[in-house]
Image 1 (tube, rainbow, N blue to C red):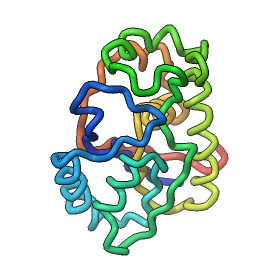
Image 2: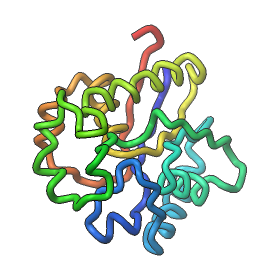
Image 3: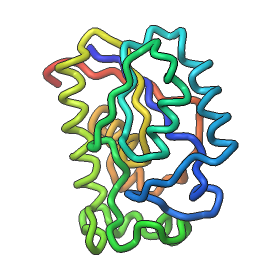
Length: 180
């Protein structure tokens, strides 16, 4: 069994400006860097075997600030990225939140659908179970990362996830059995 603690990347400059970065490499804001340090202080003594992070800059910075002391290995995986909004990467966030349900199965122009994004993340999860079985890992990612965990591990429909408003919290916890 793999125990997963999922945390969102810290607050980015784009978050503060109301921009949907998606596959753009937005950097952490000053407040986001402070939140990343708090994440490390909060999780450092929980027996985390590894930090598995999206390779997008805001997630990388979160992982490096929180765990850059070398106490646990940090591994970056592009499959943990956010949904690719294609032509809409970097557009205002409000429009994307209204239209998410439309793109569950239809790909964003020049990008991917939410189903494709969560399947991509699920492939990474399968590899993590094989590699880290019996461990507790921390994953730092994005909406698509959490949706993949909720959908593929908890069985929550993407349609339901698309209809819900995001509410930040200090991590989500999941357990994945090997050979699920």
